[in-house]
Image (tube, rainbow, N blue to C red; front, side):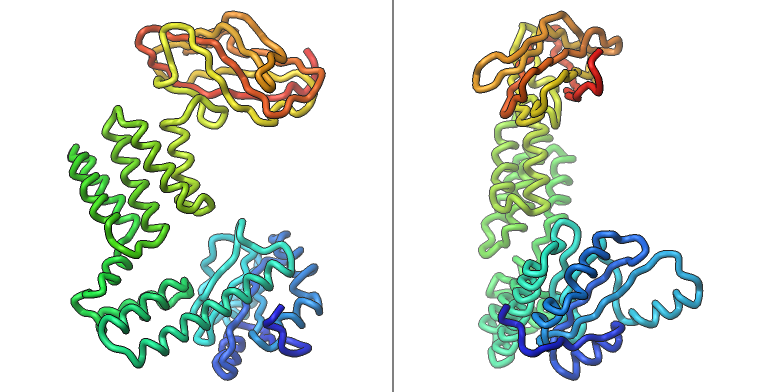
Length: 398
């Protein structure tokens, strides 16, 4: 890894010491926070990666490394000592363990925790290296801006913010000073807050001004240089307008899936996908059924079940009522693979407040991959039914 510069890294035993060394040597800080008496993943990372000589030599003297043991059950003296060891550090992370990178002034550049926490040394080193490079890019843009004025300065500061390495508030203040009338249009972009966008749209929805809400959101979408996240918020807000308007499910699904397509792994992307499938998608094991799937004449629901039946044995498929005035009348439940019928349970069942015979059995001698459930059912004319479909393997044959 290119950040390796010497045989041993510079490390600090506590945060104040790490910050002091970082300022003196103008180096970034790599912080590892774990809990030795409660956080098993953190202990595994410490033993197998953090404490290893190879890992330390890779970090070398490019950074100051610091470890914080965030233990539980401390007595008063231990709490006092711990608070002194982290003085000036905000321990407010989404989850633990966490690996974080700070600049020499103690400003956070990046953090990795939860699903982003690295499980391999090479992954951790790669993330750290990328963070260091992005911070260097940010500082170079700030230095460039110091010799510029007006729109040019605002543009360089905007690019520095877009590195995603902190200092947003400080840099935005400098942008306002350089471009007070926002001739660049970049300040407006940065001030486009996703939650406020959704809030304004919801306000118009509450007033039943659906077309006005869509027009306002389309105007926001015309702003140039929007980030993917900002675009996702606008699309998600449009999807919500269509959902609340009624009889606009295709449009709702279109907007939400467009938000998902922009960044499928982002929180907003994943949330948009779930909402699209829940409110506009077909019957599924994840979200069940509702009135839009129902018919007063027999209809066949075809449900992708993937590898849910990957082991031989007996499975129960239960159609469970949740709400609605209409009971679901069930004629049969079948399992297909590649378009061919594998097994079928054909008996009359129903849901409702007095669910009866609503559990169907799938008996398999062989595993089924990429299976598809076919459920033949109907409701009364109101079609007002909502419920979930549960699939579970029987623990033993009955």
